Amino acid sequence: MKIRRILATAVVAAVAAPAALLTTTPAFAADEKPAAEAQSKPSIAELEKAAAEAKKAYDKAVADEKAALAAVETEVSDTAPLAVAAKEALDKASTAATAKAVADRALTDARAALDALPDTATEAERTAAEQAVTDAEAAAGAAAEAKTAADTAAEQAVTARDDARVAALRALDQARKAVTKALAAMEAADQALADARADAGEDPGEGGGDCVPAALLSTLHGLPSKIAAGSTVDFTLRVTNDTGRTLDQVIPLVFVHATDKTGLKDTDHLLSLKWSDDSTKGWKDLGPNHRTGTINSLEQGEHGDIDLRLTIDAKAPVGNGAAFAVSDYVNDDGTCGGSPDLSMYEFEIGAPGSKPGPDAKPSDEPGTDRDVKAQGGADKAASDAAGSLAETGSSSAVPQLALAGGAAMLLGAGAVYVVRRRSADSRV
Image (cartoon, rainbow, N blue to C red; front, side, top):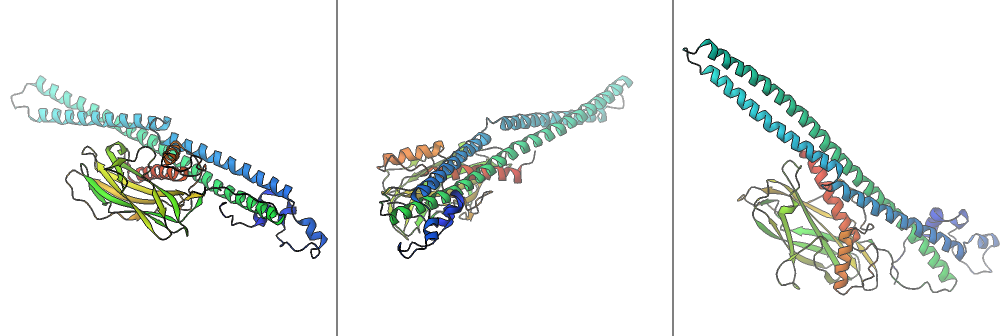
């Protein structure tokens, strides 16, 4: 069955059809309807044209969002030109800092040697020691200037890199909003056409619709606000269904991200996240698609739990991390959707042996509007998720927006988190 359209015919008329389509007058019997009113009612052909134009605009918006998502993936990668330049500048700054430390030590040693000269030292020995101090002072001064210049260059390079990432994320956010508007227009156009066909006695047909925002709440329970490097913690992902109907398959997605204390170094590779439920034997990796197993037949008002296990390598530096969770669903009748909000829980990575903190509390999603809907942009993670879903027995013809929204939201939120963390904490 079709996903119910909720926008009036007048809306699609204003967006996608000629002024003649603006009428919203109810249909009366032919002998009761004034001639002028009958002439103002849009024909099925006109509504079909409006629906086709709305579909074309929606497809373009989806393509633009996919391109914006690809741009984000490029900017947040370590191989992006600005990321490479920032790393090189930071390496030079580190080398300059080491050189300054060596020069400062040499100056300290030269001064100590001069002060330690005995009264019996010859004039030549004293002159040589004084010259050594003069030379060391010059070297230390040059090293300090070089370090200042390298620090400035590194700060500028890091700022340029982060600014580019923020710009790409803002463009993605705008593209997602454009998809939302285009989807509303397309749904309204489809509804107007379906209503007209129904009035004309035509069968509007059955079949699935586009994925829609849904009241699926994904929360994490038992995740400590501080986790020591070298330790493992178990916690729970809970998905609560408040959509008003039973959902055949709910697909939770989880993502963890971490940096060192400065926010300049990603440490994701030192984190391992696994999942488990009643259907598994032991723990399984989430993999690149960030999804856990499915929760089947989740009734209205009920919740389903997925066990999670996070391990932080003992080599992980003291730093900051965040866990993100969101859920999508696909029903047997082809309808689908996902939560328009994702949950974020920040935690601190402590030194090995440090005590865990109390349970982390949910934070607002960093840097992006909370009304970004779960839709659009079929990135690789979403494609992998859709493929895995097919293996569980769902239709392989999962609608284009299914699962892609959740994966894209995780990617976008992780990128925003690291940019925000670096902007707040980085000090070259």
